[in-house]
Image (cartoon, rainbow, N blue to C red; front, side, top):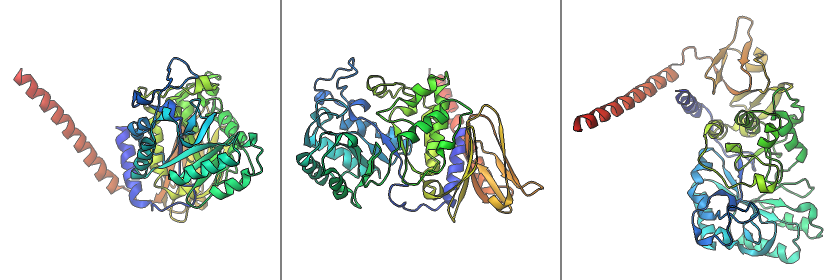
Length: 435
């Protein structure tokens, strides 16, 4: 029944929150995967595939992404980053043999085009890796031609530090157009739209690997910062949390809660939603397992449902109200809407008192996950109380007293639920009579 409450909260929110196009990439959220490790739809391209060898191709393909696209879309991600897709001698695309075409291990050119068309039809975007480590003039030309042939929406730069070509900077400037988003997965001074920091990834991991950890490293984030709790090249976040003997699903939800509400462009590595573990390519680049508990996935879906229709959470102003060893309270707001985000990553219940100056007079704070409504007390303040290891978003609204729209919606929801139970019972009764 809690799910019904959350859905109703989202429905009510959708009536009050204007949805507009966001500038640059600030409204996007990226799901980062490796084609070979995601899903194997057909064995026709299983060239040298061996699922028992962690260093070999596993058989994942472009058609597999299409087959399991709903898994990503349901979680609310707007961008799929699929790693290098060029012809390669290894599954992760670190040894490109031809920048002019796609890897036959992943499918045909027609399959790749079909994937891009499918994403476009679903209002989702496609990003590919540009492995730059060994690229020189010929490779730069081939990559530019590839981008002109296949209309991807963005590219992710890797291997920057290993490239000594004087042509590198001008190549990035040439491809970084209004039609193509360019991000980097390592630190550099190149002209990119979204910047990466290893220190920032480490700050997320250290802050949420267990409770009561310093979170000062998550202050001062910019809208052009890439936010990630791990990457395909780092230790998995779950590995870091299990080293602390913590329960991975709870740790992941706390970390993702911050990832999707703080300023910046969130990137989540595939498998995070199932608490994938690992501390090396061999252990962290596992074949995606879709037969697992959906608890984390549902949390991400709920949170992204709010984020994707909220300008405040995508591009709004940020005001840190409290930040003390795992207890973060901050405000995200535009002129039209405001949220108070509370991340209680501590081992105790926490309380925050918000003033009338901060919230406004005669407002109410609607908790979208725990369903509590906070109104002004006799002193004119709003008192927020949150249990340990909980993420909550409070939507600031006018104090409506009894929320008749919500009450009516609840009555309808319960009526539909009871009608469903009755139909199931009646059908079962009919089967008994027939036998």
